[in-house]
Length: 564
Ligand code: KIV
Ligand code: ZN
Image (cartoon, rainbow, N blue to C red; front, top):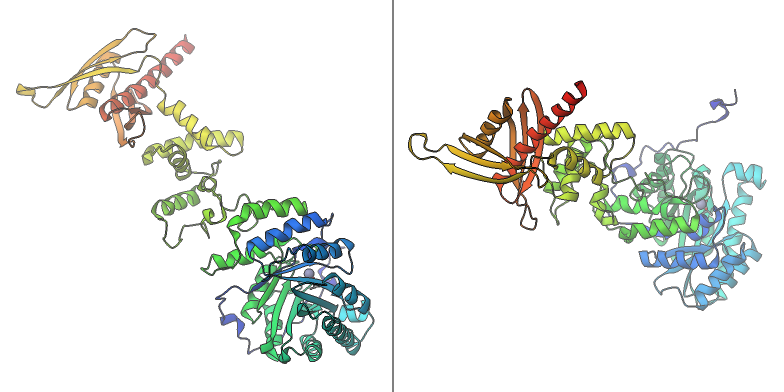
């Protein structure tokens, strides 16, 4: 009985038939603000030290972030010290704004300004919660009382900023729990704050709209943002920012729709660390733009470093399926996916528009290797097996042999239940197809084309054996070298030898073997395939036949011995 949905009610939606955002397109990156060092940090089991904050900050700067919320200096000595270090050691580039959060209380605002003394550019960010739950249950204030908290704090911010004119100030206000606040009231509070700050008179102002807890589908949030966008005063002088969390798993989607609804700026964290289910993930949001041909203005090619640093500092592992960053997100195990990827990759040329099946972006763009794309397990098919042999060992197989080898590999995978490395596929290929059975190595061959009545027929003398064994001489005739060998074998082993499939390939110049032959034979009704590599195509073809027949012979010897 404790699992009872009647305990909850749906969030109110806005009746907004004039909504425009659904037909907007995002055509450029929003302004990004990274809040890892504040919101992300506040959610950690072990908050960051000053040294860790320095490294994280340095990385954010290198990636291209221009607004970085560095802490909550009035609430934490570490954050205060970090602000001082950034300023006193001149660690903030001229085009980067550091941002700090403070509650809407005078003594905390005063301490916040103290932490920022000497900064070139700084954003002072104040907030108070505006939703009915907070007004009624947490603060016990009515709408007027709630608005007054914001207005008073705006006044203090203005006053304290005026005492530190060496800094270029931006003021930021967040009606915390905005998405759970009546939108008309949020507009009223925002207007009241702006009436103090006067963005219309040149003060840079950010109005940040948080989905402090994500409570609705992203379209409802977009409606709320579009309403603020349409109704607040001095809109042209205000930067509208959004700050979404991921409680329903839609933090990125909500931010994206909010940008369509008019937001200029998006706050988030790398890989989405943050309170509860996390903040909006800057990696996913940025890479979503990138995959649409839009410059995200952030260098995500350093994805591996990003993941390593975030994991180290937050002590949180990245989910292997995390968009764009997880270990498995560019891997295909399924046969049909592998087949499609392989075909598309074979056609793709540097400089082409990326249209590879199943891969939304080129893994190489975020430092991933093509080796990771196709991986083999029991779900994989011939395409995948062929792909890894071709990719890692330069071995190209005909379709019929791909199918056969894939079956063998699949059996291995089913037995083991896990992944089969490309080295293991290669070993299996070597042992089942390429290795030469004992006594069946081609030592030499001599072909003579007959003249006279049998003009064109080939007479072959072929010697086979191993260094440890006496050489066997075979002799036969046929239309060509292969049929002459088949003839010789038919005479010698008195079984019906037939070539069922045959393909040959040249192997580039840099290998000792220049040719590869793939063969499938039937020997007395038993089918067997083999592959051989040799310095010339004839030798490869002859060795392939010998290996296949030798394998059948070896198997029947073993069977006879077992019977006896
Ligand atoms: O989630 C939130 O509402 C916040 C604000 C302080 C912006 O982090
Ligand atoms: Zn937050």
